[in-house]
Image 1 (cartoon, one colour):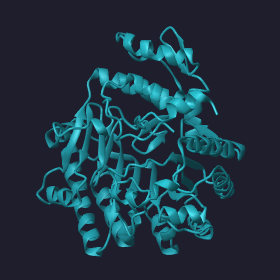
Image 2 (cartoon, one colour):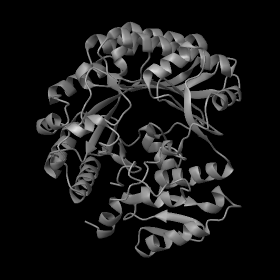
Image 3 (spheres, one colour):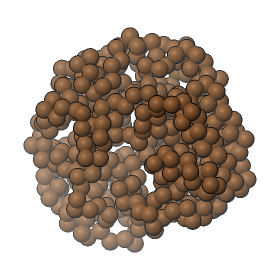
Length: 444
């Protein structure tokens, strides 16, 4: 194990799915900014849309998402109606009929809306938006709830990609995180989706979970690779019990040490590359020829709130509680509290609660951080020809001497040794980063 990686791996830094990060949002940005940014979109402009459904039948102990347990179906129904009302409101503020190029359902468990609920939301979208001919329509699914009836509805609605939350296949680990899903359940979900014509499949895995070992990670990767998903995302578990009450039920004694986390991440990478996958950025893997792999090879890979993507759209409309919208001039996030979100929409107003404005300096730094996270290299002069990065270069000098980054004039290249801690390198350009970083996960 590289001692430098061990040293930097414990740094608490953002995942940089945006810049500035959501941790830097404030209530100074709200509905007025949101309305102005929506009004600034051109009629017929292509946009991406994210739909957030913050409900699950049960809450897994490891979960860090904005979700809650659905006790009553009428509450889920009320939320669905608020989501449809928000679709109508947002579209009315844009003017014309924007075109959706990409549509992504996240949660929570979006399928909790049921067949009629899913159909109703899509009908609301089709009423106010145009769907691109080559629309990528993706949904996050819990393998335990992928029924024959569900996949038939998903196929009917034009879903073209499904992401399965697997995390780990070891029964002991599953019990420790409150998510029991035997291998045959996962295999059946995969088969049902493919049989329905939904053949673009993603699988999410995690390392750093309680009771995980390098050996169990090896077995999980072998079993998942045998199912041949197109993409596999491998995330490090972020244990933040101060922020997530459900995580307080995890026995911290059973969590891997920092060195064990590093080893587990390395094993995941080695196993998946050995199974024929191409590594994408810091935590994604894709089959050669997959659009994500092609984007990485061609320098057109991007990073947004869903992680690595080939989506080049500069506008993402986030719909639903806690969803974040992306515009050229800033980010805005809906209220995370569901009653507050539903109440705002019912009153005929946007549910915008917080966000941040971006100036040219922010956009330049966002580009620099994104290229480091995606390409592991960036030409500062090409991105920001009139900017000055003397302080950043001074901070990078020690990493250069340690062999983590190479500096050639204004061009930075992260070395193979430095790629594991590229988030720390990227943080050098983050002017918003606070001294108090406990809200972020460790670099590995």
